Length: 280
Image 1 (cartoon, rainbow, N blue to C red):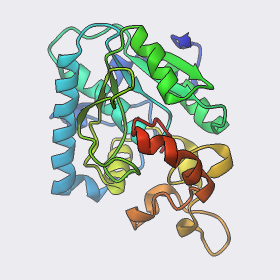
Image 2 (cartoon, helix red, strand yellow):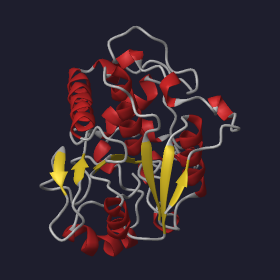
Image 3 (cartoon, rainbow, N blue to C red):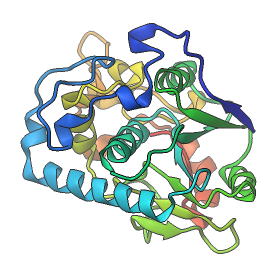
């Protein structure tokens, strides 16, 4: 288990900016510009959809409640694996912390499960975000989610904020606040974006101009490991190239780039315990 406080010498696209310097005013009730450290993608009409406003408000409330339930340093950590859903949760969590009146933690903590089969671009993106926002990252290498959680719980972690959505596989029975399964280390799973759709995710990231892994601009819509993830065939253009992930019209096709080998390999363990930390 490795800890990384980030290297402030990273100057790419705003590297070295403390997380408190991010401007989340656009969804905290203030008229503000998009964060300067993130690329803007233009206006997105989905953001004005009432369903999106509702899930955004509810998710913010869940984050606020989680922060109040686990206020002490080291009790709570955010799972950040570089996927689009994890990005939403991390940025939303930091926004809520900034909006709260209580004293803020000096260094929010995130955990990264490095399976050894991660895309190099995903790992570089995770490192860049952590360094850019001066977060503390705990990296758990080449071990299952269960073993990783055993070590975290032994070090006083009581809750993990995760980017799981109800449409993800094996999520039946999981709620916004769900204790770990019997037989597992005891911790609370906090899932702020359970009710978000695929299009809600992209409305959030694009409208607020938050950064995401470049693989999503290359046709990937759901990221797993290198050996079992391909660009989504639904985004293939006539010339053989792929449209970006946010152009996928049918959200039910989100995982069509995942190979069947991945599903067969993961299903037995995940069916026993849905706390999987897979990238999405």
